[in-house]
Image (tube, rainbow, N blue to C red; front, top):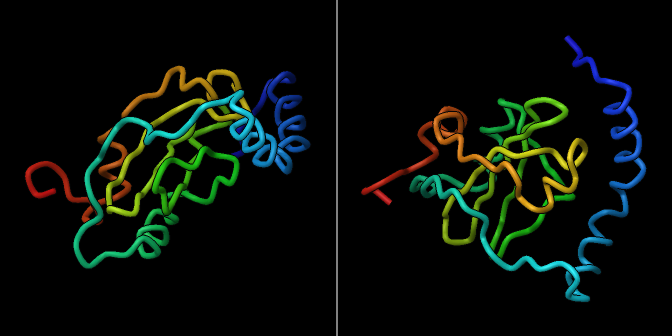
Length: 145
């Protein structure tokens, strides 16, 4: 079943379709000019990538749940994988893996729906239980980390 969008959301989707090809370059230019700042790992640590597992394998594993590349997303310090799963037009799950094997994830507004809220991290949630279901035994948590 296809999600029914309001007229405003359809207009946002069309606008985003036009903006998204140049968005990464624009974002990066604003970062270089110091207009935007971002050099951190975003919050919500989930754990570590399980021993013997690869980042590529994890990407294949979570693809079955609908995770895919999101080229417009921030690239956090030492990030080696960034994927998203749209829950609907308005909200998405965002998963990141880092060079040291750390895995972080959050639930947030999509940039298509609410670019201002998305950019300023307004309304980010941990949604740890959902991420645990998506990651399964690819994730090591707590004392085992």
